[in-house]
Amino acid sequence: MNSPLARDLDQVAKEKNIPRDALIEVLEQAMEAAARKKYGMQKDLESQWNEDLGEVELFEFKTVSEEVEDDDIEITVDDARKLDPECEIGDSLGIKLSVDDLGRIAAQTAKQVIIQKIRDAEREMTFSEFKDRKGEIITGIVRRFEKGNIIVDLGRAEALLPKREQVPTETYRQGDRIQAYVVDITRATKTPQVILSRTHPGLLMKLFELEVPEVAEGIVRIEACAREPGHRAKIAVSSTDSDVDPVGACVGMKGSRVQAVVAELRGEAIDIIPFHNDPARYVVNAIQPAHVLRVYIDENAHKMELIVPDDHYSKAIGRRGQNVRLAQHLTGWEVVVNSETKHSEMNAAARDELSRIDALEAEGVDYLIRHGFRTLSEVTDAEPYELAGILGCSDEDAELVVSSAERALEGLILEEADRRKQAADLPPEA
Image (cartoon, rainbow, N blue to C red; front, side, top):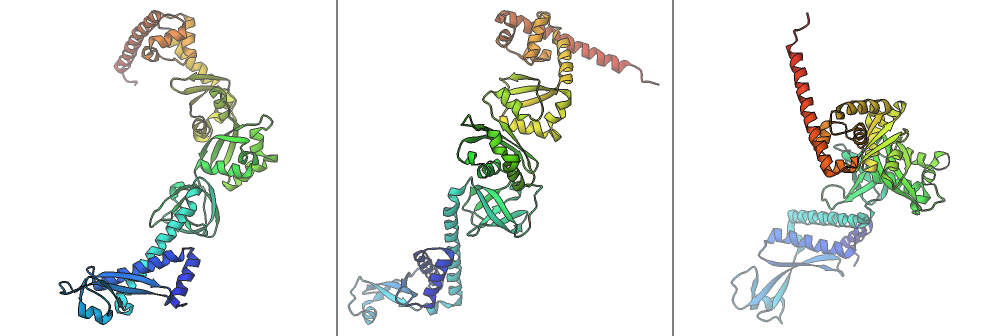
């Protein structure tokens, strides 16, 4: 029978893409919850969907007994046989109740349960649909704004672009198209399940995958990515085919490919650099467009000092330190940039201080400076075996160098104390 309720079920199942059986189960649960609200929790109640009538039927079950001790769950044989002449003592008799008797409040309870169950089913379906799309780019429409967050319409679901995942330089209006990176899928009850990002490095990498066929095919690999969203980014690329230039492939003819990515990121500048297995070459590439004269590596501290021409110093550092910061994030190395003049001045000051070590010749001082030692305290903190390796001497001689450096440091501290005392004793200028 095609009842109004049955037609409603079919329509909801079609619109919400929820299985009809699941809706019937929800309806039965809702009717049972409404009945318990009216009749109490003591009664043995059960609701069943009648396909022929197209409605939910409600039954109260009672045990047939000779003597009734609890009216809620028992019925006498005489009363039971009025309903079913063939019933016997001990049988469970189902008595159909009128659904109309549930009343307005009970009906409202049923409606609320149905709505909640449908929402739960929708959330579960959304989770199932999007759980495998984490780490992908998705396109939607800006629907509304809530406390700084952007709610994005994905068609079958809504997604959340939190304020922390938005680029400060970007603005959106209701109805705008937006591409974003899926960072997480949650089963949250009140917030959208799909969490998006416009700041994640994965967005940049996926955009290149869309624009550069060689990246999508795996011929060109994006080895690392660093972003300061809305301002500048760096990606390091390599190629599995010696005939394919990875940087050229990502740039494209007349810069068409990289410009398409820049346009989607609303003007974010992108540096594409060649990846190299040699850390020094990699860092030198990463600091582009600055030219590097020399590199000093401290593997123990995972640190590199780059010496650049004086006129390239500002390029190497970048606006507000942006270029060197991105290079550090990209390579994983701590990077210190010094101009050629500053490096020479620092070396001269270091040579003057380390020359106080009596146990060292001038050549030994140069060796230590070349390996990053610039103060007496750095020498005194060093292990003798480390100095022995640098100076090419025995551990015993290296220990003498440390002892000599400790004496020189004590003298330097006393000299500095005397200078301060003399400065304090000077009369104020008239």
